[in-house]
Length: 315
Image (cartoon, rainbow, N blue to C red; front, side, top):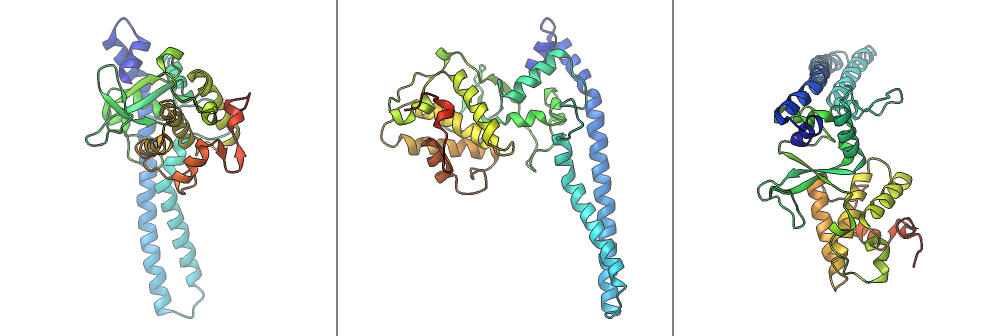
């Protein structure tokens, strides 16, 4: 990813491009450090106050069981405990930048070339993957041009994080400066590939079963456009990564044919990719994903028929 950023901003001088990228995010690094320091300091102070007020509360109750004055200590303890929990979790929602008064996606103005790159990543026109770790490669792993296997697709929503431009740096220590959904930060190299591929670049469709025409038919760009419309109109932003992975992997696997066992095999691969990309293969609401995927691949979301979003002609 850092290589692509350097090429975008200075295609004639790669080393100069790297330097320009680092300059573009230096202010963002400072702001990230300040925010992190604030939340850490708040956590430490609130923990000390919670501990002290908790000890005073239980000591007072033990020595003065009939006194109503313990309410004061109780309020102090609960208030400090709430602040402690807030400081421990606040950095996550603080980084998601979902505020009405915010006009730009990041805390820094990026050069036009880098802004276009981040915009393509946010919209899904470009996909980002992490390189495969030892013993972690899934059956349908993507292969980078240099032969590296890529098995962890990064959700496009990741690039709406106010600190996500730090991923453009070639310094791996910068990648861990923002957190996502309480998961570990990025530690492996990030590769960028195009999702919107020409029709000829998609494997030929061998599935002629009319029940799956809505899923496997048409071109990949058309499918992605229809998928974006479906997600935008029906699925909450928090659940969209799950559905995006499920649909795109299902299309790829089901285009291989409708032979006996193809549906079960596709569901198995989808669950593997969900587990690698999102850290879990559970359904959107935390339920069983197998039943959800069976319904989804039959063109149902709950009781709603969704095939019309992908195949307006219907069958």
